[in-house]
Image: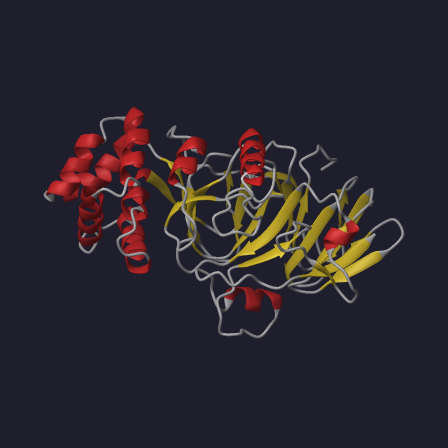
Length: 379
């Protein structure tokens, strides 16, 4: 079964006013459009195209995954997501306290973890993602060490084991953190390199925010089109710019630490963060056939298959094994999805929910994204 699905973009302030309308073939409204959700999460379930109801009506138990288009032009909040155990405990705690699910101070909207991956679409995509080794941060800061506040920070960054204490101090609200933030923002005017460029952008968008010096503790990554990151539970991150296809577990649990006017919960963030410095979290695809790449994070919640235009050659098709629910989204060209008993054509910017198809033939000249659960499949 194929069902067309649509949604209304979410108007967070950090979003582009043109990128998502351009992708969907819609007229810009002049307002920011930051995210476009394709899924059955109750926070913004997709509507059924041409008929009444939402995808949540078709799958009341939900899907294990959610697909989004992201279009930041300034930094998304500095944030991390909980593990399953943390989400279940946090949800139960806030339910018992009587905090409304839609209350701005609510951290846990559901009981699910929220691992996620993001794929750069059509242009470079910038992201802060994960703690980097302290030696790398020191190398960035040392040319600016003439300022006493920066010199003091270098004194605190004694090794990778100091990350938790330094991060906690940076979110403490103490006056010397404000002095450091001002010093780092001023130093960025003359310093070169991607980390300092990020500081300049953050200082312009969020002046005085402790997320500005925190950014120097993190990997600053630029994804080229077709590259992806995978962010597991506990990974500190903040997307910066570009257009991306995000696939994630079906959750809206976000614990924020800065770079946002929204609710910040420092104590809860410190509980869920993984402070280990790890390599940049790139997710490499498996090329299963010409023009067909599969991004497998190795979790049951989701995986992403990307079918390039004319992947099998002019007039040919690609067969993709099914066996579970899926969401297909076409961003360019046109694609026809053929199942056992029916077919469905998607124009640029269109999406469909697929249910019960043992296999799907993808034919056409469209760039197609297919989100599914992470169960092993035959491609």
